[in-house]
Length: 184
Ligand SMILES: [Cu+2]
Ligand SMILES: [Zn+2]
Image (cartoon, rainbow, N blue to C red; front, top):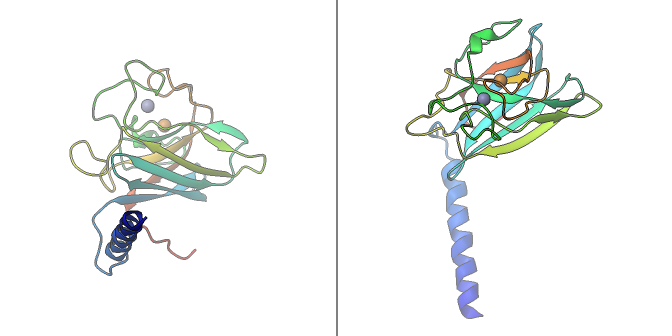
């Protein structure tokens, strides 16, 4: 019982230490990238954030104005979002030269993620992780050099190069982030 208490105290101390590191005033290492998503008309329709965790990257997005249902969402290889077709963003982020899709035996691209699902109100809250993507070290996504793209249709997760997910309907360049939200 005493030993268990000591372990809990150590765990509490460790997490408190982590919090103090993250809340410092100095600029933190580039462990998060944020994209403001815009549609083909240039309207802001949401945000997407990539955060480096231990051994994986989390993609969190909040998007509005979508058609209800599933939409492909990927990290694309170029930091350029020129409307209306967003072809400027290039193909999927793919430093390991794999094929598309988490269901593809030769896949996936590092930039591949599960589908985003919009509700009947056109809104989506998305939270997914990938062990194929990194924000640090070899093959990392770099600020201003990649984009998050949302597609018109569902990604089948197997068809190269983009899962038959159709037109690119929203795009946002991934920029350096402190993890803090700016006021609207
Ligand atoms: Cu895409
Ligand atoms: Zn892909």
